[in-house]
Length: 222
Ligand SMILES: N[C@@H](CCC(=O)N[C@@H](CS)C(=O)NCC(=O)O)C(=O)O
Image (cartoon, rainbow, N blue to C red; front, side, top):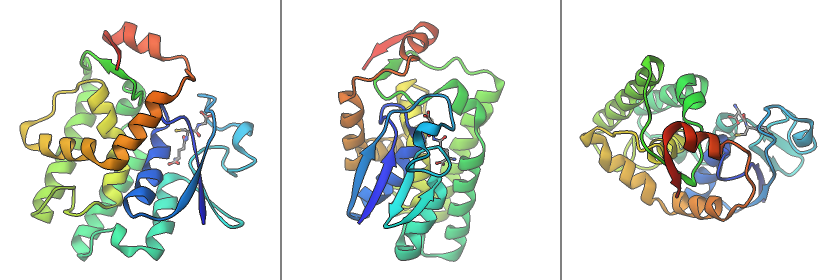
């Protein structure tokens, strides 16, 4: 059976991706939750993750780290994790890779913090660009797939890659274009998203940025 090492569920956006994927596809796994340092690569994690970061999947003696690599490893045995049609699969891979390697304004300005409900995001030019780009990617995916409720019809790795973005948009109450509200709703109602949220809300450990975010954006603990 797989073991997935993840960070604090309130904060660990990268950990959510393989976790929701395993849950959605009903793949048996056990979870080991570790405390994040909030400092990036850490010796604390090197005992179970060669990169010093989580998430890390253990399959017997094999370690697979990095959320996208884990998703690809799982998809080798579960090809249905990517869209069936080759063009959709290529687009799903493109937007997953773009999400994985970009969106620095979104990542730095709106860190995932599930327990907070903040009063909107004052968007500078870089954040506005990231948000517009995400909305365009979602819109184009759904137009290509010609069906919902997820980005490419059925739930895929692309949805797992954007799941943390859904929490960021929700927590900071970012204005969502009308045509993308159904996708947001579908994701927020996903049973695994709700299970993750409940686990995040039950956590007592604080990494220290909650008060700073409340002071910056206004709002409260959800
Ligand atoms: N590209 C990596 C990024 C992993 C990453 O940055 N993980 C953060 C947590 S979300 C981490 O392990 N930080 C170490 C720490 O805060 O202790 C992935 O996709 O898995």
